[in-house]
Every structure is written in C-alpha cells, then in structure tokens.
Length: 76
Image 1 (cartoon, rainbow, N blue to C red):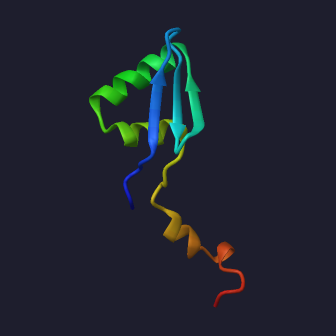
Image 2: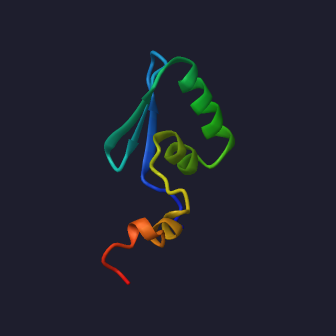
C-alpha cells in the first residue's frame, strides 16, 4: 500500500485547522479536535495522521472484499 501524500494543513489565528489534500479542502477542525490533531501531527508521521483524520486512506481489506461472492457478479 503506498504511503499517503499530498496533504497540507494550516493553523489559523482563531485556532481552526484546515486540512487540504492536493489543493482541495478535506477537513476543518475546531476547538479540542484541532488541538488533538496538532499534537498527533507533531508526534507522528504528518501525512499518515492527516490521511487518518480526513478518512482518505485505505483499510487494507480491498482485496478480500473483491473476492467476496456478493462482489463477484459476472466474473467466474
């Protein structure tokens, strides 16, 4: 699975954090959530943290789901 990339965040003067992905707004965090996000970004891999917070990451089970009988219509 490729590492997440293309994420950036901006902390505004009022404490709001805006996360963008490839130039498009992905999430806006305010209050306690913004503080929690900032502490996680400082202590870990920033790209991975931003991908997790925005939901733009893969779970690793796509191959298993593709093989499920319900998803195999037309392919045998």
